[in-house]
Image (cartoon, rainbow, N blue to C red; front, side, top):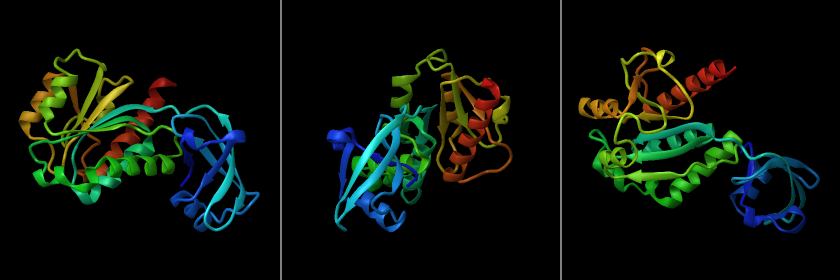
Length: 244
């Protein structure tokens, strides 16, 4: 936990927050926080600052929250992710949230095993936990909304019926495609990342018809969780280079 996140409704008069859940357990066991100590803290969707531990009776912690910074700015990248294997789904969502992406759309596709769509890891509670955990890791107060789509075409028809639909920059990652630095990039953008085995040709053609550019991170063919980190990392660098 690199940022203690609290809900606005948890903050009382004078910035007082009382915690008696996994967050207080983490502060106690892993950060060894004692009365008088402080940690970085923020309000979900709100500002950042610090929290001072006032008391800890072993069950509940009372902290005083002081906000001094502005809300975190989301990374101007929205993700379209083919639902990965359940055992890696949580890690993928946590990683995306740690980067601070604007939103996450999970979708079915041809190479997604149908059983994946009934995984308990896709429950609202599980996804909420994963995005929050990722935001704590990434030290951002932005928690991306996550939406599940049982049909890829349903998602595409709702968002991008033509190549001209916003945003102007839409990318689809696929091994063997031109390197991402050669793409015509602008922000905000949408990035589509396929399942293990990649998108099938018909899906690729449909994305391209709707204005998506085929890109890759280079020659390596990576698993979904590694590919996500790699492509978001490259986009972060390219954003800095092209806006400075």
